[in-house]
Image (cartoon, rainbow, N blue to C red; front, side):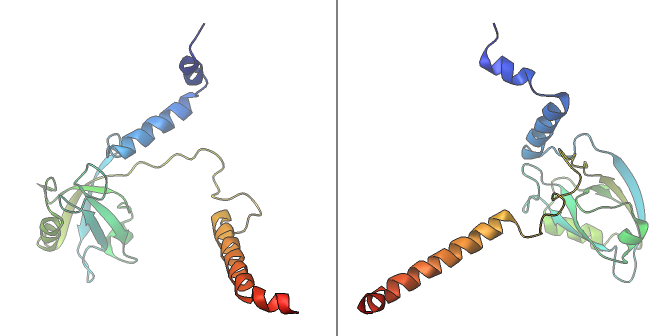
Length: 174
């Protein structure tokens, strides 16, 4: 006879197990351990390289990881026109200089002084597999969230209760 925990594990599908393992990796800061590494060459344009960065020793973007990450790709910038760099990608090196154990400002300075032609080594973020339908909401569901409706309802109820308490003496006179 098996124990309850053995029975629970036996009901997990392989995809469910992999999702749980991936989630644990993300919580431990190793979201990028099995992703693809790319070398990208960008030519600095009038607006720079066309993306913003986050992270560093002093501003960790991913828990337990002081790496530098792409925060935002600027429309019509060099990175957007190239198309390979994506928001969330980890930048491993710029012109051969590894971005390990650097403060955010030190990384920014490396980008500023990199010259016109910039070679990036990046680690692409893993696509997050979906468990269920590909749409974020069921067909016909309004964009207003259930939590938002609940909050609005509670707010109206609180206001009505306050009004009732405020005007209760006036109501009893009539």
